[in-house]
Length: 78
Image (cartoon, rainbow, N blue to C red):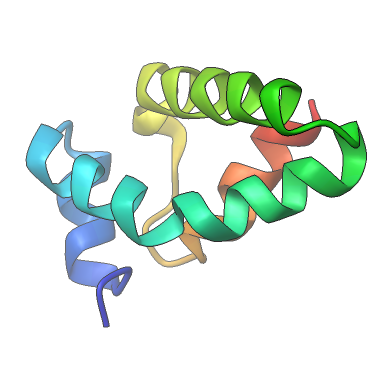
């Protein structure tokens, strides 16, 4: 699985390539999630970008034993 514990642990350790892999694997689902709240494609794209930027800055707080996409959604909602 692309978002399995090993790649999540690498991302949590500030491995940029692992984080990019997680971004690629989760961007479609995150976009659809955010789009439901914004009602607008451009706003949703902006929020997805902001979410990934915030996630990278907070990656040290991510628990790799938990689902990465759920963590992203919490960031997006906040």
